[in-house]
Amino acid sequence: MARKNFRNRLLLCVLSLVPVIVVVTVVLQRYSDSATADWRRSLPDGFDFSNRGNKRLSKPAARLCPNGMACPDNHFSFSIQSGAANVVAPKICLQNKMVLGTAVRNAGVGINVVILNGKTGELIKTGNFDMYAGDVNPLIELLKSIETGSVVMMASYDEPASKLTDEARKLIAELGSSKVQALGFRDNWVFVGGKGAAMDSGFEKYKKNDRASNKYEDWPEILELKGCIPRFME
Image 1 (cartoon, rainbow, N blue to C red):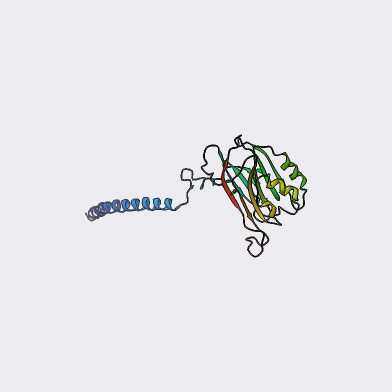
Image 2: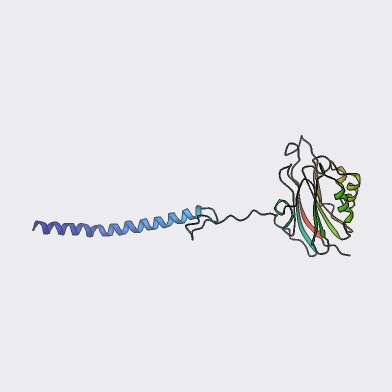
């Protein structure tokens, strides 16, 4: 009889605990869902929940060119960045595509040049000319070979002027540059000009090397230039 009473009391205790267990389970489940949602929201974009073996998605590649400008019809968008001291090479982009720079392995110390067909925007040629330890004659030959209707883009890196002769400066000035005559040792310079077409005079920037104001001790700050190049019309 005593054993029967004990079993009955035990059964009653268990049955009385069931509602409590159910309530606690529901509360914990709701708290867990809320905490999980907050935890997921706190994670950085790109975290992969679908595949636990891969904790993060691959990071997107660094943007090679800045966002292109919205240009009118019969114009090409461009952006140019000069070199930074003797560490970071310049880059030139056309229609949001890099045509000169480290990523395409055609930039170097001195004066960097890109020549475009001014009618179609097609890339004709790129070149890098060392104006410190190199020879200016290949640059002069290139400048003399530029055909009417071409767009010419230039960017300095490290040292653009030591070997730059009067003849070379005159040929660049004929493309529309107003700063090339003043270009000196380790100055920074970016320029867009053309042959046979009047270019916007705003398509040029120049920064003199001055230790009192330089950003990188012996070199001035990076120069950036972007805009819309009008298509060459005969």
